Amino acid sequence: MKNKIITVAFILMLALGLVLTLALPEKKISSLERRKLASSETLKEDFTANLDEYLSDQFVLRDAFLAIGTSYDRYILKNKEANDVYMSKDFIIEKNYPYNEKGVQAFIDKIKYFAEKTDRESRVFYSIIPDKSYYLDDSKALKMDFEALVQKVNSGLDIDYIDIIHRFKLEDYFKTDIHLKQDSYLKIVDEYIDKFGLDRQHIDYKRHTLNHFYGASFSKAPFSKPEDIEYLTDEIIANAKVTHLEYGTREVYDFEANREVDLYNVFLSGPSAILEIENPLSTNERELVVFRDSFASSLAPLLIPYYKKITLVDLRYINAKNVEARMDLKDKDVLFLYSTLIINRGNILK
Image (cartoon, rainbow, N blue to C red; front, side, top):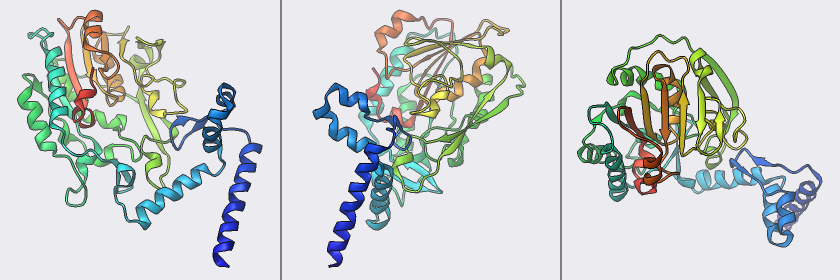
């Protein structure tokens, strides 16, 4: 009898959910999953083929079922790496394991290719940003051999290394996202400025806060809470012009591009193959080229006051030949800045 009651209650709940799904306004975006949902436009394209996807995406209890499933896996089944993430101090930490020697070698080969295109009289450096799994207790979690990764990169590259790995701590990162908070980079900006032979500046940043940030890892752990994003600006940053290869001119902090899907895209409009930042208030003619992943999106604005022009290149979205055709690395400062997440999967660089 008890099983019948449970079954009937479940069926009624599903039926009620279906009725509410069809009755309530459809949602365009899932903040929890950070993606666009199937909509009525999807049904118009092919009703039969897309109906299941539409009902699944628009089901009124979808977020609740996702949270219940995640909670069951992590707390009832005791799967401490459910969805390939760990939990530590309320931080959701993406698993980066095992150490991928072939991936690291692919990264080295790609960086060497571009390093050879630079003017060796210029200042050329590289840095490694640790992903959050660096701070896991390796007796309790599967953790990549970070020491082996750093040693291999250091032995494979004949470029000056700026070691910033030990400058950060777990609290410098977002709890629900892989990235560092922007003000965490203030710990290393002066070091870069010194290495590149630039004069330090006292910059009186204005701090601004955006609410309700659902990071890339948000949906992978139960009971997560949205957090805030803080961004820093001043007169020089506010007057800089950003030009993207893909979609033209934008602001340094973009409050339109893909915000609903990923609020982190407020930094330089998110992913871009090549973008150029011009500083009309610059007091020098120096140029910087940064080969980077998404971590540099929030660092780059802090370097704008020191250069007339900064070019960011993301080799995940453009191949080497196209980069060569568009830019010359001679007489420019060059920084290769990558997270261990990308270095360990270096074969994704084109």
